[in-house]
Length: 318
Image (spheres, rainbow, N blue to C red):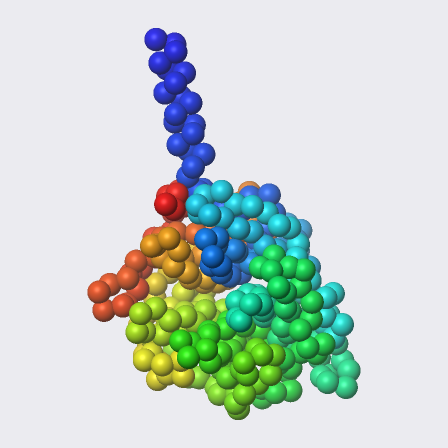
């Protein structure tokens, strides 16, 4: 009888160990998730919160990388990039996204610019490049791709943050970004030069954190929104990467214990996943956030079903 009970308990423990528990990373505070599937592996690029419990602003010294092949066990590669990589940069490591293009990995980051001949400061977007998804990464062009002086529709200095990149079916690349203003621009094939004027979008309730992708015939613009305070996640769809964008509504309500949330969306092993952050770890909060993941489901017309936030997380991917 004791042997059967022991076998049952071990089986339960093994089953529990295969369940991803939200937040998925518990040893450090992580934010701004950006998933990338390369070959059979899902790589997760993250920000890193290090503010103390008493601090009332962000302290984000670097970006980190994790990977998984089953959505429940995560390999930690540690810090793989920081603003110090960029000679022109100063300040914190805000939201970023890595994309694969023609044999290289391009990590688009937002941080702040030193006062110099290229910019008088404010938020800026840079690009790091590597031959491997985990680096080492180096500054791809030795200067910022986007500086504060390029965008004048908003008066504040932190409007050029949160880059997301879509590489369309015809290999044309598009960069979207912005705080309180969503903008887009075409990129040249090297992903390090602009190929069009910057266009400002009029997106309902938009605040920041855009995530743009294509699924089947629809293009999606998902973003942190001002539907309420704290932020929620809302989205638009379009027939092309340049619009016109149709507002579709709220898909994620407020998250526990964090003013911000941030979407990262990916299809992997026949399922769709929605990454975000909250402040639910012990001593967590708006400046000590943690990344979570839950399944995402679409309606037959391509619209997104409301995200169900769980503490259980997702089942093992087969």
